[in-house]
Length: 33
Image 1 (tube, rainbow, N blue to C red):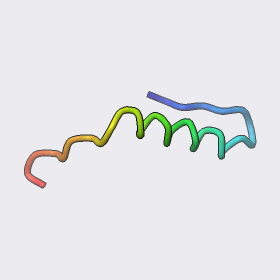
Image 2 (image 1 turned 60 degrees about the vertical axis):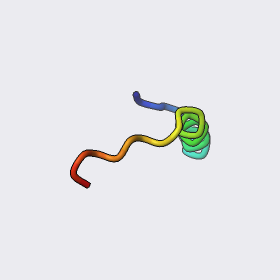
Image 3 (image 1 turned 135 degrees about the horizontal axis):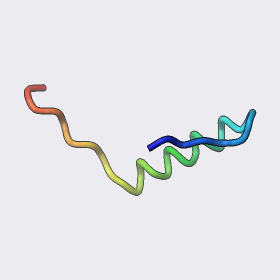
């Protein structure tokens, strides 16, 4: 997935990404790590 935001709205993209990660939960640890 790619999150895009208008020019100079980096904080908006970061807030959206953080909200997505919070809603999705943590990613599983890769095997062998």
